[in-house]
Image (cartoon, rainbow, N blue to C red; front, top):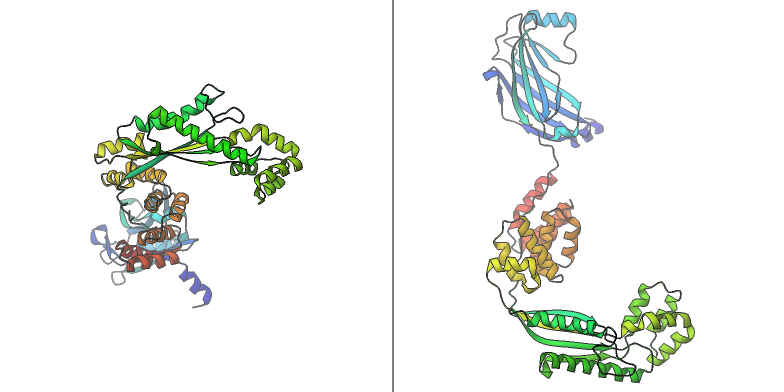
Length: 470
């Protein structure tokens, strides 16, 4: 066999059907049915044992293999088993075309059939049928019948994973935090708060609203309040220290008095000049001297010298920053830490999932998942909410990656797997990801690692890979 033919045979996708099939109530037997294809051609071969036939000289039997898949169909060349008179009639008149003409002889009953046709995509899952027709002397059709020979399955084998979801650890005390920033205006060089000064009422309301949400909820309890005050970089640094420190202390007093908090419940910090905030704005801006301004900000100079250099080198830019950016650098950041009670009622957890998911722990969300049908919309939604509420948690990311892969969302699965940690379950999930992306070498390596570590599902996964790769 030459090299070209050998390469063609290696390229074939083949399905062999060894079981004999009986047609025409036992009068015809089909054995050795073999179907294969390359990208361009479909090959069909079989042996037809017609020893059960009783054909008179003026009769013939026409056996036509037919491929059907929905609206698509293709008739392959026929086998015409003809009695003596019909056989010579076809010979004299050349009427058989590409069909196989066989003279019926009781002593010679085995017909080897071979056909090659152009391969099309719809054939991958077609049904191969045998169209049977028995004709009389004038070729009037006496009997017709269709019988199924086999179903083709040339679709690419897909990896069908079994996902392993990891139960989260129980959160003994559920502590949550709400953060915000308030831009409170103080008179020049003053540290007292005037609620009616400029937009102070609105800004103070931000803090009140955050605390009220926790205070008015029977399921929550405030643990602590933290306030950090910032001043802008203009002016003398020492004076900015005094202003930032004094204004933060005043805001603490305001909050403690308003809610009758113990002094120890509210903690504070301050930053005299918010150079980081200024840098973030400049970095995102299109100021003409952006690079030079950033160089000055990042310089290790004393704050007063740094501000002087900005004024001297870039006076127009500095004037813009002073008018439009510096006011926003005078702010007070706040954080309210609070605890949330534990929930055990599934119906209540389901309601909170849709209204206040921030109150729930991963373990509480997992309780709902256990009540759902795996792969259902609600099941998938549970893990989507979990990773949204706990975006850095390894278990949440692992389970969300499983859900994403189940939905065919490869992009998000990859993003979640980055944060899924190094557990053996995460290794197994990464093996699934590799298999779904047809990186079978990596998948096999990771599945083997997971199997050695005791992930029982990896055994079946490796068997699937072996079949696919064959």
